[in-house]
Structure formats: C-alpha cells, structure tokens
Image (tube, rainbow, N blue to C red):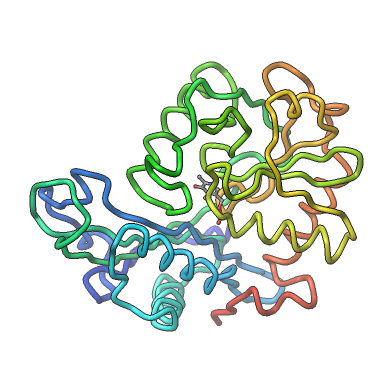
Amino acid sequence: MGGQIKTQEYAYFKREIVPVEEANINIKTHAFQYGTGCFCGIRGYWNDEKQQFYLYRLKDHYERLYQSAKILMMNVGHSIEELIDITVSLVKKNQWKEHAYFRPILYKSDLSISPRLHDVGDDFAIYTIPLGDYLDVEKGLSCRVSSWTRLAENMIPTRAKASGGYINSALAKSEAMLDGYDEAIFLDSHGYVSEGSAENIFLVRNGKLITPQFSDSILEGITRRSVIHLAKKELGIEVEERSIGRSELYVSDEAFFCGTGVQLSWIREIDRRVIGDGKLGKIAGAIQKLYFDVVMGNQAGYEDWLTPVY
Ligand SMILES: Cc1ncc(COP(=O)(O)O)c(C=O)c1O
C-alpha cells in the first residue's frame, strides 16, 4: 500500500477543499440528530505498474446520489460534472498513490429541530481515506441469516442510500459478528433474501447466477450492476433477478457478496450449512478475477467505467 507517510488529509467541505480537521459540523445539525442524509461509497484503485489512479464508476455513483436526494427531498447543489471534478481534485490534493475510499455525503445541515424533509437546508461534503480490503476476499465468509428484518420500502426505502437506514445494517452486522460470524444476510419483510449489511448477494445454481430483484428491499448496487454485466458479456452466464427463499441459500452451489466496500467476497457457509464444496467456486472466482482486472484498469473495453486521475 505505497508505504508513504501521510502528513495531511484533505476533505471537501462547504464548497472548499480543506484539511480534514477543519471539516466539522455543529452538534445541532439536523442530519446528526435524525440521520437525514444520503451518501456514496466510491473506491479508487492505484495501479503501480501504470502509475495511475482509477476512480470506479464515478458517474454512476453520483447519479445514484441524485436518486437518493430525490427520494429524501434534498438538493445536491452540484452538477454531476462538478462532483466528478471535485473528486478528481481531492485525489490530487491527497496525492493518493494507494487504494482509497471516498465518502461523499449530502446531509441536512440546518441547526433546527423537527424530523422532516422539507424546508431544511442541505450541505455536501466528501472525505477520503486509504482503504484495502473491507472483508476478506480470499478466505470465504461465514454468514448467518439475521434476526433483524431488512427495512421495507414503506419504512425507509433501501433504494436511497440513506444515513439513518444504516441503523438496520449496524444491528444485523453486530449481531452476526458478536455471534462469531463474518457477515449477516437480511430477509425482507416478506421473508425473501434481500442483501448483506452493506453489500448485494448472488447465488449460483446449475450454472446460473441468481440475485434478489430491486423490489426485495435492496440497494441498487453499482457493483451488482457490474457483476451482471461481466457475467453476461464476458462469461456468457445467464442471470436471474428474482425473489430467493432462505433455504435456497443453503442448497446453492456458490454464493458471494458484492459491493464497493466488500468488492467481491465469496461465502463459505450460511447458518452452519457449507455452500457447495466450501471452496471458492468457479463462477465466483472467474467474476472476482474479472472485477479486479476491470477496477485496476487491466481489462480492455471498460475504460468508460474508469476515471484516470493522473
Ligand atoms: C446496503 C447496501 N447494499 C449494497 C451495497 C453495494 O452497493 P455498491 O455496489 O453500489 O457499492 C451497499 C454499499 O456499498 C450497501 O450499503
């Protein structure tokens, strides 16, 4: 990871790039009280051989921020092009030459009381940190189906990447980890498989990929979209987007999570049932390899998904 000693990190705050220590909010902030914010998680990959830093699917992430903002009646206050320019400037200012993570956040910044969406002002900020793997991409994860139910569309819509909704994720993640598992799998309010605490899920059965459809309380994941595209286009694998029953998890041949943070991490067991033969499966392995080649700028034909910075 570069091995350099960093002296100063910079963030984007109140329309300026400032030292991260100066990017602070007041304790009266609406979003701090009520979770009224929405955010993105974006990764950038440093390719040492090419001496290049690639931001992954920036435009798609910012389009989803716009979608979240619409649901939460918020105003991004920047065009998508401006957001892309700001992110690129932040990479340069931080002089990133290692893998990094970006957290753009749109939040209700007024210092006012009353949980509501209308007539409360918004602000936008981005911070960035160096980040390698968030979950182990090699080991094979042990998971449990959560005793917590995924938020339903008419509670807090999971289509919006809404700050307050992550209480639901935190409850499930802590329950799973404190019980000795690596990660949780949510069922939705109808009892169908939804997603992990911060990642989408895929199964493989009889050579086909299966993943929960949008109406099963999932985030419309950008990595999910990448996986579907790569599976169909590069590997000729059929993909079904449909509801999945809990027991279908147990009898699947392979299972894996995908998301910006988790990247592509395969699942070894669920609720103490070993998945397939308990090893990284052929399809998950092939998609994982393709995914890492794409994000690192080593797969021809995917230049549109990458923003090179230097
Ligand atoms: C709840 C949830 N589902 C899925 C994902 C995956 O989405 P993406 O691939 O856009 O990062 C995330 C975040 O990364 C998430 O927080």
